[in-house]
Image 1 (cartoon, rainbow, N blue to C red):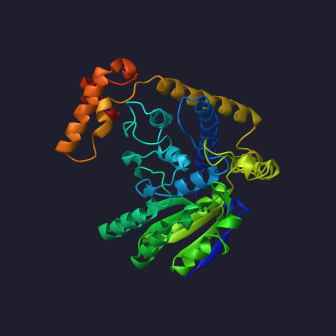
Image 2: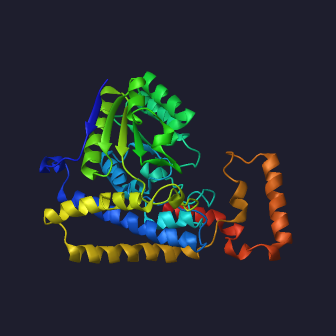
Length: 379
């Protein structure tokens, strides 16, 4: 088994597989994600949505890894991988419809905001419990191996999730079944309010994989090129050897864990400021500027463009109607069993009887359900 440490590459060779257009696209999407986070954080604080998570400080881990994967590779995320969605083509409209639970949301408004998912981009819907996606990803990777397709599965998780029992089950399944699976750990320093110094006494997450017989790469998670190279190398091992690989991306969560968190209680503003000065966006901007690919005028213009795009998507979704109330109990089974039919009927009788007590005007009428679902699938 191998244990490799990749740090920030200093020469132009690191980008030999990346065209200038791709590198610029990485930067633009990092800025777009940063802009989206800033606006949606304020939207949540205003009470317009119930919950939100920012990706401040982890943008390079998103874009670098996503760019190195094949679009047909299947992804299992934790909950802080919005940048991977953007890279794969998940639109701002898609994100807004999910966060606002509109009738255009493919999840029909039944997921916590930011728990995105999309069959179209091969990204399995996320769920909030930590670590549950890890053994699931191992199973999907095993199926991928059995299919004979030259593809892999990527599973994102945080340093906190690695303390869950599901992480160890996922590692062991992947190793013993020779699964083409990239475990991508975003080690951002904190599991909600618990720092890594209180989470484990070993050498981070990378050393754990070696114990399971999994090849491991530890990489500078704030360097988009290093992350790209590490993921590219890991994917090659997965495809050629049908073996799992773990990448531990050492990064830092600049923002609060979520809108339910106040990180000033457990860390100093000086610590946050220190890491903010060396953020992934700042690093890549410096690289682009030094190579005459970017300047202050382009920066100002694109920041305004990104803000305009996010606000356009926001205004389009904020007043959009919710899914029909009858959708509440659908899709649990292929065909709704009698006991759920009875419950659904009771719900509708209750709402219709006391419609003046509920904001029924905010929901689509049930007669429009089939047409709207067809519209969403067509779109």
